[in-house]
Length: 464
Image 1 (tube, rainbow, N blue to C red):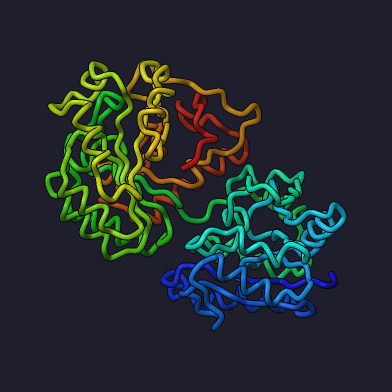
Image 2: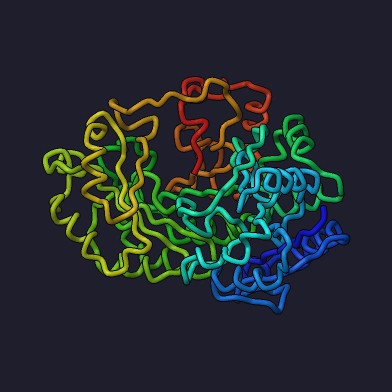
């Protein structure tokens, strides 16, 4: 590859870097050695630990890149892309040059395998299209609104189906780091080779849990009538969970609230304070059974934390029927819309036959806030909406990515099943996660009869 500049962008979280400094440095150094014959520019955000060239936002970063490019095409790459494929990168570069695109994005290719490119003609002006304050990231896709007129964007479409696995090859969690180190010594890696490897060894995809749902209260609404234990989670169990998450999967997303409303827990403030010991991203999923300004403010005061209110209805009678609380729909609506800190607040509609027809009006009602639309789980409702799953079945995303912990410390096979696979009163989180590997292994062999739910489930392809 000639007349190009490789730009390696470090946008990784500082705490994450400090935790895995040695492994991340190994990944970065091997990437540099792979690009030994190329012109390289290493830059990063204000927290970058591997470069002195640091920037506040994407606009200033790309303005600097423009000054350094000097009539060269630019390849944008993550500074920790240990599995970068040079042969596929060259294909993308040639695709941009042959078609004379300003920018070339990639499609169907997981992050970390193949970078994106900017032409030497356009790089000098690219920074002007970026809004001020836009945070720094190593992918071009989220840098600007690509519907801006005047940018000739090419999309390099790969025939690979890796994107269907909902994975990437950047060190976003502990398991991914180890996975990259095991594989990246092959200097001539390609998408085709990764495709073949994961086809032969599907279980390589299952490293550590990436989404952990924890039910701390059994107080729920009409969407979820299945209750495993009518009790609150004890502080001791919650502390054990948080401690073991920090050891096993410190980058997993933690969701507090499976079916029960966490705000209904009598010691919610005490449990929530334990989250100060970890840096994981946290979701608090409320059923709108409790309107508490104090608890809402507490949740929104924690960094890296978001709050979801399940409202679901625009008709008062249906809202009262399913929520069965003293608050009216009007009160709930006013409370949420009056929140000062709405930047981390979501509103959710749980789909069932009664809410399906109201989705359009619900979106209009909540047009000023982000809306989530999710299905009710496999039990709890007789009028659950059933989606058409993909024709070709693959191993369950939930078994590969998720853990569901009930308020008594027991852990489900998945949140669609009532099968208990272990309890934190007797076992560790890591031992139960490894035990569940047996179920995933059977799925990998296309054995989908491991429980009564798996045979008829239409959620195996849905992921959190």
